[in-house]
Image 1 (cartoon, helix red, strand yellow):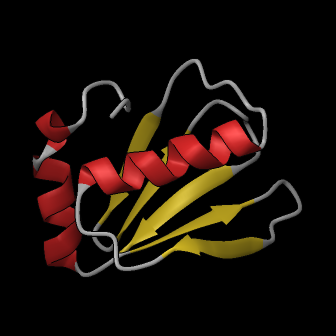
Image 2 (image 1 turned 60 degrees about the vertical axis):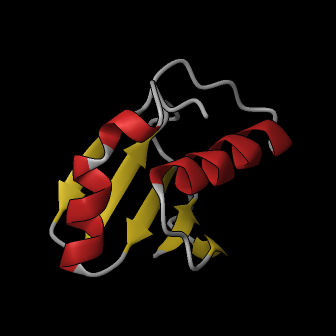
Length: 87
């Protein structure tokens, strides 16, 4: 699966590829937030069949995980792998 980041100017860029687990996805997100000095006080996942949008509290910038329907379904059903977005 691919993880991308869309900024407040609606510009999107891929920040990681070939992700296969919830733990990997949240590690990339948390590392990105730390590198950009952003403290997230919550995270929310919004699901579509081939996409997960991650709202981490910025109101205008989001992360997107894209993959096949099977990959996204598996990601959704393995929520116990990472507790509260922390690895």
